[in-house]
Image 1 (spheres, rainbow, N blue to C red):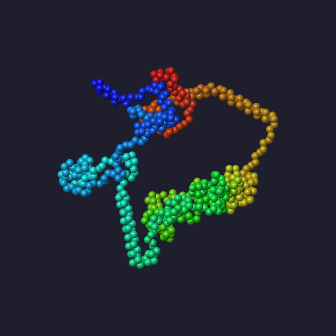
Image 2 (cartoon, one colour):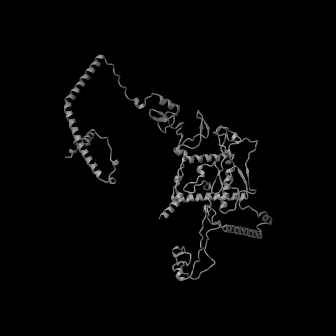
Image 3 (cartoon, rainbow, N blue to C red):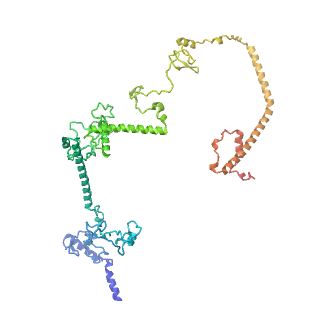
Length: 563
């Protein structure tokens, strides 16, 4: 028993932590390290017999106690560790398909009951379940799959994007395209032979149709801005400016002017836009001016049509056959317009609404346009067209009955009239200046002149005026006495009327409170709309009744009101 415990302790000795050094041993160790650094003492040797540089720090050269029990200083743990791993080769991969060399005609024991293959069972079979399995029919035995190898890939092998790539797969694609190209050439040659035999094509035209025609006509469609790509030479040529020309970025030194792209050497906007110069007068107005002027837009539309037609199978090209392309483009636009018109007519015929399309111009509807007009400080038009005067649907400036002004051009004393004759009668005949003189005089009409003149009142004396004043004062005193005698009875009558009105208001308030309580008992969706009721300003009696009937929660006697 003691021998066994001693053996166990010997096996654990290597895992014990190093014992603490005494002060004398520590001083000797430091002196030895200093002598080794100075070269006076031989360098320390590791377990492989290699010298250890004394200038290497201790935390690098010393081995952790839980790794190496010998505790000898070494640099082995700092070097890359060799691992004996047997990874799969670069050409190893799973075999695809099935074994086609052996054909099985009889069901074998242990095979799949559905298809008859030996490499899997019925629950792992990927074939459609048969009505009667191969175990019972013995026919239609499926071939066995390949026995797959177990691949042990390293770190790079698992992340290789070409892992398992079969070069023969690409070779099959190349052969397929070669067959298609050969069929195209054969068909083209046969077509040329038929045209030559029928007389539609001359021998000179056949020779002119070169065999090395580049079918990839649009190889130079995707150009970098500022570059020209030559598809024949396969080179890229920079668009360099002539040295004598002024650089685009020197035309306007204002940093807020048009942006210049140094990579593509393009300045799309006009550099003189903020200087007030006309774009027609300057020598350079930006790349957009050149790009969107003249027939550039038409050329771009034609080129776009050629690309779209080529994608749909029509052999047209802008440079090779411009006449054919132009005829096709014109016919396409005509057919497109006809199709739009027929579609529009069919929709209008089916749903109607032609009257909504015949709307008046925008100026009449909104009395505003998007046309830019610039005015001076005096109101004169500097740029653009002056705003059109909005006209109504009624006839304007129509002169009748010899009038030189329209009805409504004159206003006097709340009446409209004609300015030319100051006549206030509509559709009257114009009398000109004579009518103005007559209408401006203070003459009295003929009927009013027949009335008899009233007698003028004679001036009263001071005595008569004093007597009239005394009589008026007496009449006022009598009226005041009558009011005083009847005021007592009238006040009592007014109080009775107020009491009756207040009583009616209280009854109405009770009815209103009961009605509100009944409405609160109903469902919200079944309540009537209060907005349909007629709203009136409340009278004084109704306000008084509401205040008397109102229940205040802070009233200590509120709980005794219903008893």
